[in-house]
Amino acid sequence: MELLNIGFAILLVKIAISVLPGVIGIYLIAAPEEKKRELRNSVCNKLFEVSNAIPYPKFARFLAICGSGLILFSLVASWFLLLRDLIPEG
Image (tube, rainbow, N blue to C red):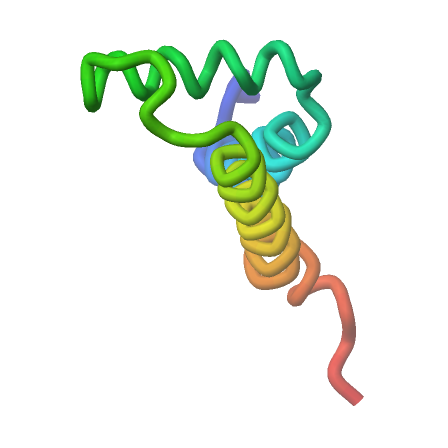
């Protein structure tokens, strides 16, 4: 008996593709304000060489939209990659 067969490896990849975007999306939405400000400062420093080029409310809204999009992608990927085959047609 093989320790890791190809079907199990494919299942692990499907689960990773389905779950990780949702986890990142939840983090982007639920992160504390201080972490969001640190992220904004680091992004602005790398892009514009100024720490506050983007106003915080606009950046927080952008993070919420991206987080929602990642959660939606995670739900759709879970349906097509994992759950679609489990529901019988009828």
